[in-house]
Length: 113
Image (cartoon, rainbow, N blue to C red; front, side):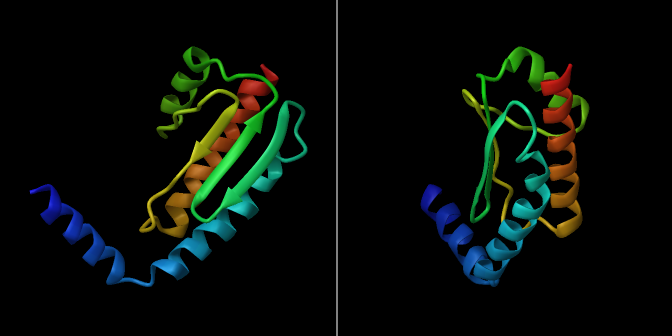
C-alpha cells in the first residue's frame, strides 16, 4: 500500500511542471517574506525553493506563538529560533499570498507585543 501511494505521488508530481511551480513559489516567498528582513528581532530571512525561513534572534515561545498562528487560520510549527513554511507545490498564488500575509502578521505581533 505504501509503495502504491508513493508511486501515485510520484506520478502526480511528474504530471505537472513542478520545476516551474517551485520557481513560482520561491519568488513569491522571497518577495513576501522580504518585508521581515529589517525588522528588529529578525536575524535573517531565507528562501530555498519552496521553503521559506524567518530566523528570529531568540528562541520562539511556542506556547505563545502557536495560538497566534491558529487564530489567523494557518498551521505553522516553529523550531528553535526558526519560523518556516514549506507549502505544497500545488499551492496557488492567492493561497500562498494569504499564508505569507498571515505569517508576517503573526511574527510582527509576536515581536512587538
